[in-house]
Image (cartoon, rainbow, N blue to C red; front, side, top):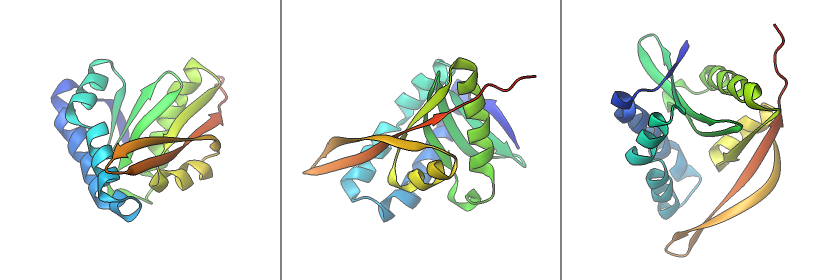
Length: 156
């Protein structure tokens, strides 16, 4: 397994991986308008902008892209692992890499957790410190958690 910083010509790979996971997992947790909100939130243009800013990473194993994550100082977002690769250590490997980047910038990391991801983050030591909500249209509201984890810089 290796993590690479995404390049502009990989925008479609990041988008396709992200959209695939949202379409395969999120309907079990959210109604259609909320799923559509997530697809728009993590659209090609947003991904491209984050890639241009050097924030997006891809996880590769055996010649295949299996996960992606976005990092900005002490904030992680857009963490997705292909559904056929979940529960095999890929998410933990990717999070270790991204958390190390956060540790270089500060002492804690923040993540906005969707329902499918919250349990994974809790197992990694994240604690919910507030709940937020966002109207997504058609009378639906997305409720999510802001989670934080204290980090320690590794001494070499």
